[in-house]
Each structure stands twice: as structure tokens, then as C-alpha cells.
Length: 145
Ligand code: RB5
Image (cartoon, rainbow, N blue to C red; front, side, top):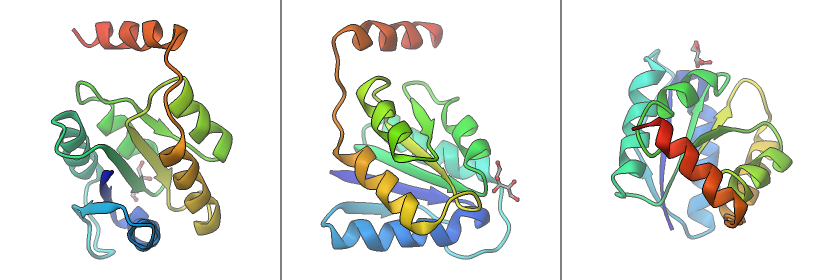
């Protein structure tokens, strides 16, 4: 599975920890920045990562800002993106089972690294349930038209 990682300065340290974690697990990672804690604008990074997922250059995206809020809002503006901001493993699991989330957003200033890595692991290993949820996803995609 190929995953794009992106963050702003507020999510930089957590993004780096996620990158190390996923590389050790054998995932193919595309890190599109940032590469330091220098201040940047999160919409640029959320949009770029989301476009890579929407264009099928990668399978999934994980994006991080200070709260996870701004970068998730930006990513969700891109057609075809279902970005879920998760603060616990239950949300991560349900965002895959019911919402077929293709981008995960995390808040680097909200949760600790250990919890974040657990969320990432659950999110990457849970498959979409389909069934009645397929119809609901289709209704979301209809809103985009
Ligand atoms: C940057 O200071 C901060 O606003 C950003 O990381 C994020 O939390 C926005 O939602």
C-alpha cells in the first residue's frame, strides 16, 4: 500500500514519527512535506495530499496539522476525498468500516505519539464494510456533483 504523508509545522513532529513507524512496517511512503517546523499554510499540504489520493497516485493519505481540523477541512474540499479527523482508535475503525475514509487527519498538538500510531495502525488495517454503507457513501459523492 502506498501512502502520502503531509503536515504543516504544527504536525511536523508527529508526521515524522508516523513516517518512521510506517517505513519500519514496510509501507511505501511519499512524504510531501513539510520538512521542518518553519511556519507554512496547512491548506496547501492538505490539498496536495488529497489530490494525490483522488488521482490514484497513492492508495491513502495521512495528514497532520496542529489540531487536524484545518488540514482535514482543506482535504475534504477535493472531489473524491473522505477525510476523517480521528482522536481515538474507535473513530479510526469506524471511519474505515462505515465511511470508507481515504485520508486520515490527526492533530499533532492534540494527541500523543503512541495513541496516534495506534490510530494509524487501526485505520490502515480496517477494510470498508460496504453493504448499506455503500449507498450512504454514494449519497456523499452525489453532493459533490
Ligand atoms: C497552525 O498554527 C495551526 O493553525 C494549524 O496547525 C492547525 O491547527 C489548523 O487547523
